[in-house]
Length: 192
Ligand code: URA
Image 1 (spheres, rainbow, N blue to C red):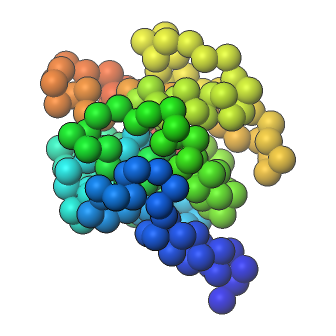
Image 2 (cartoon, rainbow, N blue to C red; image 1 turned 60 degrees about the vertical axis):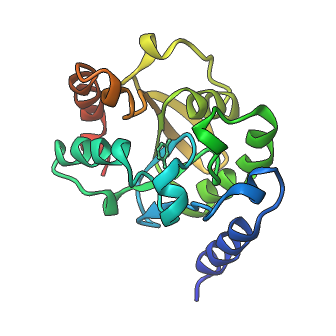
């Protein structure tokens, strides 16, 4: 077993047993993430919803169907990327993540980023946009202005691209947004 694999297994155990915030009491299953551990693209959503909490897998509900469609529009499958969330446990009733929950949980995301070492980090929605932009010292702006743009950052792990995208769930309540999402996803086409 490589050191990276051992670290991944240890991290998964830690997430599955985590009680660092209140969500540890109400979750059914923690959702670590899924996909290729050698993916060049990491997609970061917000938090598990009802079905993700039941299954322990990210994006398995309505928003997940849209995410699959978006990847399919590039001729790609979710197994070719790595998908995770800002929070690993479901906030009751799918409420927004709190600042305290984000603070407690994001060291797990940081560890996942160092294990997977993606070249491209695509944020899905505002919570991951805010966290990733702050982490890499990027100036935040409204998603309406910066969606689908590519930001290049220098990190200790080398140069990375950050791509802010709308959350796929927007297309469930605003179907017209699917075309915008598809258009934005095209910036990922050459990154696999
Ligand atoms: N929405 C998210 O942000 N993440 C999931 O895993 C599912 C829905």
